[in-house]
Length: 259
Image 1: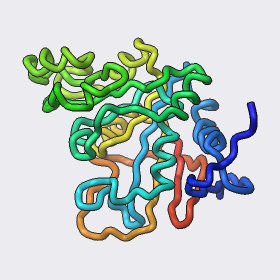
Image 2: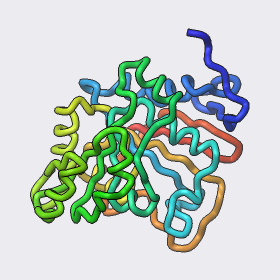
Image 3: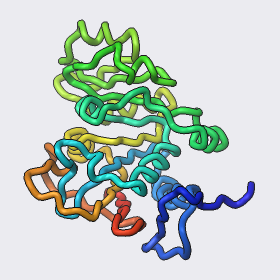
């Protein structure tokens, strides 16, 4: 295979730690992020979460994360969807960020198929109340039948209605259990898990000890106000090991492994 080059339209991204010369092409970016999964992933299972934050710790601008994202962050965001089997997102984030039928682009499809992944990742939505519209694009335009991960106290009528457009899986009784959910996904061959939020779901993974990695974009802005942090509902310190630091202009991309 010919060496990949950086497209003129791609925002330049370089590696600070470990230091690597020149701009990084897509495969080099993915390879750097995949080092932790290769070295520490047990049985192919790996759970990664991806967030963006302002320099002063806000996860949103006017309630949405998109205001913190620039072209380089969007590039990394898309690339991190390539080496995964399933993208896990909380229902609140699905609604707030306007998710439609989740689909990677043609270049990502080719990359995935050439490396043994399905052409498109599966979308898994975590929801307790199941306040989701079966007629929304997130279901009707999905290239792969989505999965809904819920708990035993969720409304049975809504489970049945959503069961027409998604596979509904009960993971825990009174509350959502991440270990049960990960086992259910693995039973379907979905071991490489990429979570895109939101903060409450991130906090649940941390609190229940089922997270392997945090990928954090630090946007070079001061948001101020009372913006939400990237994590919610989790208490107690968890150690992180810094795996790499990338940079694009003033934007930093930090990769941490949960210790």
